Image (cartoon, rainbow, N blue to C red; front, side):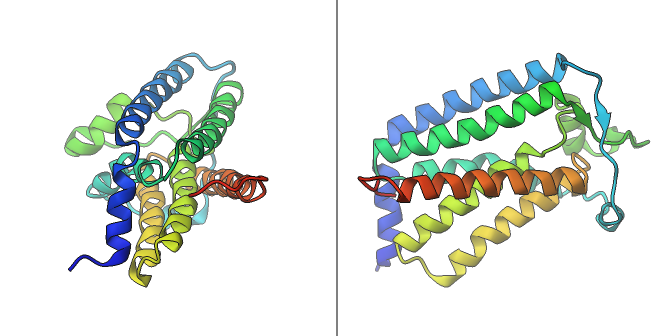
Length: 220
């Protein structure tokens, strides 16, 4: 027998599934175009982000690559589980605003991670990331910001469907694992992660507050 919360989540996936799939694909395509354009054409010379003590506590961990790339599935879950076009639009506009703010920072105040003497060919998965994504556009980590933004929204959705406690724990733990993976793959340093988490939390809080303060509350 399917639990009521699992049935509710399944039903949410079927609502406007074609629009959610197409919209997420178009959004990510345009985002990556803008991201790599700015990466190659910053307004000023990049600044190297300093490291903190915590950076030395997290060693290079090749298998963290799997968790790192899981972000793209994770961030797709929140919009996929929304119940109406208006709520989907609200979500999209807020996460777009967050991305635009971060991209403007990357363009005007470009940053990069410290240069490390590592032979990335020894780590096939990681060498793929390093080959595609240069060590720029570092702070704030948009990888972490989007994970945190998603975690806030997923928590609200899980509460709405009365999901079991283990899912309420699994969601932030996955978000935390993604944040860890950005450092374990040496894509980011601690300051990038801290700044990204702050940005994601601020935009998530503001977006949910705006949702709740509407004269006609949207169904989430």
